[in-house]
Image 1: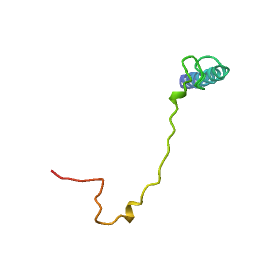
Image 2 (image 1 turned 60 degrees about the vertical axis):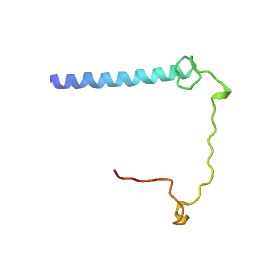
Image 3 (image 1 turned 180 degrees about the vertical axis):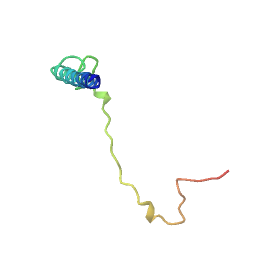
Image 4 (image 1 turned 90 degrees about the vertical axis):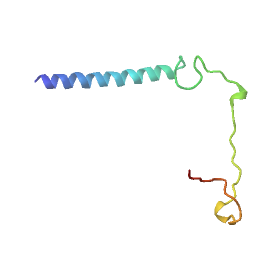
Length: 77
């Protein structure tokens, strides 16, 4: 009988924690600090923070001739 009570307390604690986390998430999404959208208390929007990544076409290493040196070297001591 006491085992069931322990399990009930554990399940109730887990359910209340999940409920509390959901409520905090909903309230945070309404615009308060820490809503997770990146525009809260400490977020600063600056144009210089953005970085654009581009990739250039790479040469196919398999088509290289055996005369070309490899960029990767392996030495044993």
